[in-house]
Amino acid sequence: MPVELATRLLDANRDAIAAAARVLADGGLVAFPTETVYGLGADATNGAAVARLYAAKGRPRFNPLIAHVADARAALRLARFSDEAKLLAGVFWPGPLTLVLPKQEDCPVSELATAGLDSIAVRVPDHPIARDLLLAFGGPVVAPSANRSGHVSPTLAAHVQADLDGRIDLIIDGGPTSVGVESTIVSFLTNPTLLRPGGLPRDAIERVLGYDLAEAEPKVDNAPLAPGMLASHYAPRAPVRLNAVGVRPGEALLAFGPAAPSAERTLNLSPTGDLVEAAANLFSHMRALDVSGASGIAVMPIPNEDLGEAINDRLARAAAAR
Ligand code: TXA
Ligand code: MG
Image (tube, rainbow, N blue to C red; front, side, top):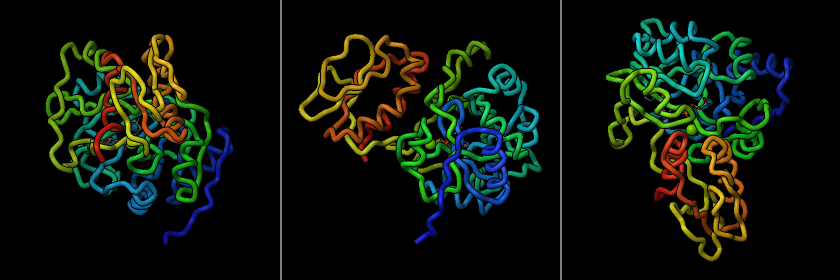
């Protein structure tokens, strides 16, 4: 049995950030808010800390992690940027965009964090707490979503606590995250390719590049280049039924838009049909319906445009057979 840790929960303020930076420097694990979801941070250069992070999440080892840094200059020390990668970083950082790039020759990030690949995923988060923590710590921080592997990503400190209490050192509570789905991942290892739809809509990226992003190859077994893409990655306990037009007995309803059918247990992602609001509510509504005692979760159709692409991607994973 692993030793149970006493997980501290601190409100976000200067003292909490200083405490969190010390925990990271000592090789510990800190959950902190970003604009997308809560991340579980470890010192990216400390292999033992990264190993503890994988253990706390129960995450398969082959899944590489995103290195978070305070600004683009720090990212240049980790990865080799093409001109187009620089262009996207200039326009969208800080923000919900992760770039997969060739690793720098002397990249200090541990091999375990990059799963032995010669590429690295980097991101500059747009959240004052995340930024202050990265500045206070002064080095790259790897941070997967702060949930047990296979669970829904956390958008509140309480979600992190429910999944990881006793397994990590510290949680910084910075309130609900604003975007609500993980960052969009674009790979520059070949021609720019969308590896994961996320909080930055594909269209916004394509407008800046002036052409369409390539599509990721369909997943090959457990190959590391298929990012985070275990089929049932975002699974709640209750079975999820997509594109529901009505609700079956015992089911709860995850609704979208004004014309929702009535069900005993209903949560609406956005009564006005706003995809930004829907993304922000997605994971917390799924968690709430999952613990409501329903026999299943029926999900109304969501338009597949803008942030709808990321929402539908996460819902498809939640509905995938386990
Ligand atoms: O919004 C986010 O990105 C959040 C917050 C905390 O920043 N983090 C997050 O991390 O979603 P995680 O570990 O749950 O997802 C990281 C994804 C995985 O799908 C992983 O396979 C992919 O990034 N990835 C990391 N390094 C990669 C690489 N070198 N090549 C391809 N994919 C990579
Ligand atoms: Mg995750």
